Image 1 (tube, rainbow, N blue to C red):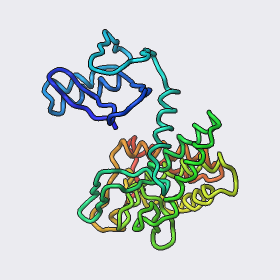
Image 2: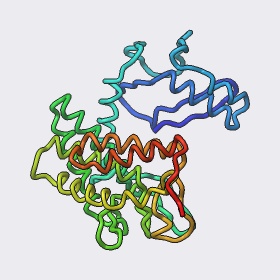
Image 3: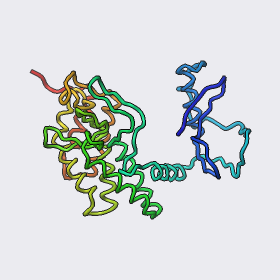
Image 4: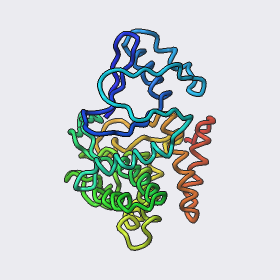
Length: 296
C-alpha cells in the first residue's frame, strides 16, 4: 500500500507496512514526482499548476540519498522496467486474493443516497482487469499459479450482488457484471465491458469448457441487448441508475464517452461477426463532432 505525505518541500511516498528480510521494490520516479507535486497543489502549499506543466520524459534524477537504518543490496536506475512492474503487480494479485477469488475494496463508496457500498466490496471491473493481467503473466512465465488465480477470480461473477458477488439481472433477464455491486443495481457500462474483456482473456487462455467462456457469452448477449439504452442521441450514459433506482440520468463525461467508444472499437475486433459494436462506435464518435440524433 502506497501513501503520500508532505513535509516542507519534501514528498514522502510509503512502501507499505514493516517487513523482515529483503524486499524488491520497483518505483517509477517520474510518476512519484508528478503525484507528489500534484498533492502539493491540493493543499500542501506550493503551486499545483506547475505539476501539470511538467513532462515526465524531460525529468532527470539529479541525486539519490539514502539514510536511516537497514541494508541496501542493489540500486539500479533504468529508463523503463515494465516487465518487472508487470510481474510485481501479478505477484501482488496472488498475495491479495481472497478465498472467494476476489480482490476487495477496503473503503466505502456511495453512488447516491440509495446506493451505498460498505468496505470490502468486490468490483467486476477490478476482477476483469486482474484476469487480463494474470493470464498474460501465465503466458509469459508458464507459472500456473497465475492461471489458477485468474480462474478463481471468475467466482464472484456467479454470485449475486446482494450476496457479496458482482452479478445482477436487468429485468430478470439480462445478466450484468457490476463495477459497483449496489442494491438496487447501477449497471455501469465501462466497468461491465472491462469485466467482459477479462473473461474473454481467461476464456481464450484456458480454452473451451471453462467457466469463463460461459460467463463471457452470457455477458456479451446482455451487452448487445442493452447497449442502445446508453445512447442519448448526443452522447452516452455512464450507467442506468435512473432506470433501476430512479432519479435523473447520469450522463457520461466526455472522457468516459471516449472510453465507451474505444471499448466498442476493441470489442469490434474481438467479435467481428457482430456489427453493432462498430456501428455504435461510429455514431458515438460523431457525437463528439457535434452530430445529434434527429428529433420531432
